[in-house]
View 1: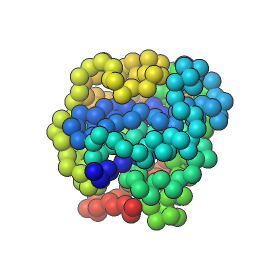
View 2: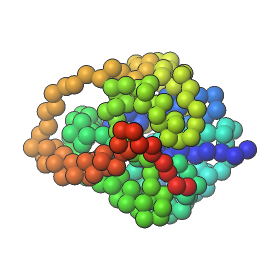
View 3: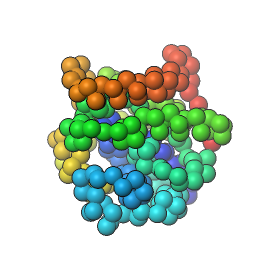
View 4: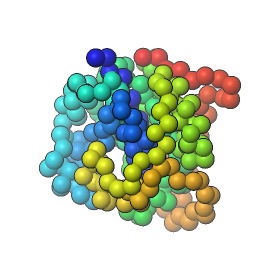
Length: 247
């Protein structure tokens, strides 16, 4: 069976878990939640909630994680929810056999959400520069990735998902728009620290603009990250253009 592997290279505190739940509704798709997380915690040494539990239960050798990802699956479509900064120095050859999608969000919104768990995140924590760097590396290899901004997905989930599926070369499935409330079997063991609000949802929540308040430290970080975000946002296809990716 031929397998299409989608690598979602997200920043944290985006709609990446909601998007994973969306793809999990498809009968033809297997989803995998942050397979490099244990590897990241080991090489970075960062102290995240549930760190010891994650390290005790996940593969921490990045190259072995790649072997697992590129191995057999029971469905023709596999969706890997990834945090870009989890990669570290893993060899990226496997990306040539995947559809790569960089999922971006305004840094101020990332930091406002992330700061509720970790008040002083670093640039590495929020992953925006790593997304920029990954885009550059893939483009040099002729593997220009798709770019998806969280804002249109929040404003119009159905239209955005339809376009995304078309860009990925797969059929849109209407059941991608909703799911049952509660935890999912595919959730990482860290879900109890990060997914509480999502577990009460049954679909993409309606977009509501909100006022964001950041500390001085967080504002400085947001300004530093903004240039990477704006660059990536500009790489999205303009209206009337079709996006494509070489593999």
